[in-house]
Amino acid sequence: MPHSFFDALEKRVPAQREEALLAELPRQIAHAKLSSAAFADLLKDVDPAAVTSRAALARLPVIRKSELQERQQAARDARAGAVASGDVFGGFSALEYGAFMPRVFASPGPIYEPEGTGKDYWRMARAMYAAGFRPGELIHNCFSYHFVPAGSMMETGAHAMGCTVFPGGTGQTEQQVQAMRDLKPAGYIGTPSFLKIIVEKATELGLTLPSVKKAMFGGEAYPPSLRDWFTARGIDGYQCYATADLGLIAYETQAREGLVLDEGVIVEIVRPGTGDPVAEGEVGELVVTTLSGGYPLVRFGTGDLSAVLPGACPTGRTNTRIKGWMGRADQTTKIRGMFVHPKQVDDIVKRYPEIVRARLVVTGEMANDTMTLKVETGANPDGLAARIGESIRDVTKLRGTVELLQPGSLPNDGKVIEDARSYK
Image (cartoon, rainbow, N blue to C red; front, side, top):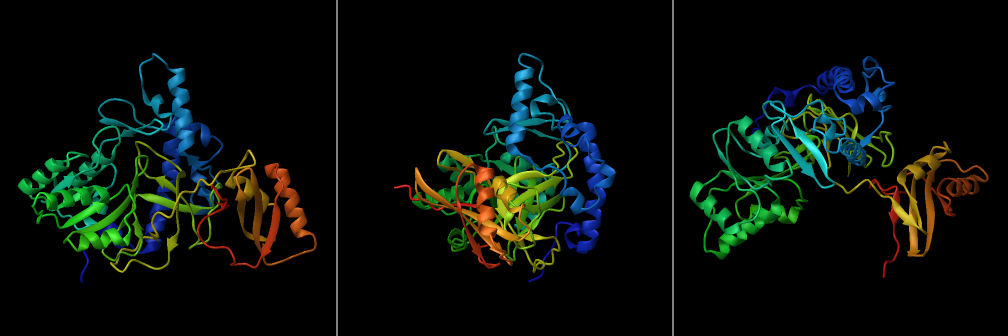
């Protein structure tokens, strides 16, 4: 089956894409420092012209959602009663209220996100095209239109592609069915669970929705069992991976082999709790640098786990593929009244060049638990386990045992801390 592409960028030789992204990188960092007060502070000692490789990028700090929230809250506290400006975004936005910021959204926290201007600001049209949508079609959009940006993200992408949108939003299931019956959209965009509810409601009402042949899903897991449920009802559904901070990160294609990265982001996969890139194929946290001018996030930690898939997409798209969402990277665990963080495990590991990989496993019952640092090592000099045990106590202030393993013994699932305790 021949495949078509949203644009020529998807078919670039990988080396050309990498060269283009790395050429944009120093310009983006310079722009972030100049236009964003937060990055002017965070990257004050960084020379943008020197950040021309992934190795140089990996030396910059990872910015996490918690820092966005903390800086936004500090700005709100400092400006209580004052006229709001770009400061409400914690100094990360290069935009201020007015014609170049048509909307502001809020995610839980609250964390406020600016929407900039420009065609397909969130870069969603590419994912829609891969899901089968084409110019001239009507799309039934059931992502929320209030507070969070999801509804606007999809609508602006659909408009950029030349589609008409019905703003269905969430809830009102019978009205959703009626609108689909009357307007006959080519497909649906929203969470998979809500489309399932709509289809089941239509069946309950004795109605069918024959025009809805395709769907693009986000915001929830989309397991094969649910995909098969839709396929049995004539609906071809594909996933996309996007966030309110970053816009589109990756999208599914007809090959259904992982998610292809968007053309407008630089993605790294790092060891949880650190900013250190992992080997290709190893599970780690997705860290994203956008090339957006309005909200120039550099090394933004998504908190999501994934891994790079080897090889190219069978559809002919040449960008890197990832496995999709594989869990959360924040594995902070409370042990005997003390919080232990993935960064602390990394601090221990970095003291011993003999360690290849490590995982802290917590077992037992709450208040009566034990922790074991399982360590892959190709060497076993005398006293290594005892010295690692001393470092566990030094870093975490807790006692733990050490188990030495052969390289390759630990599962490749991104876990640095595994909580295997009984919670009965």
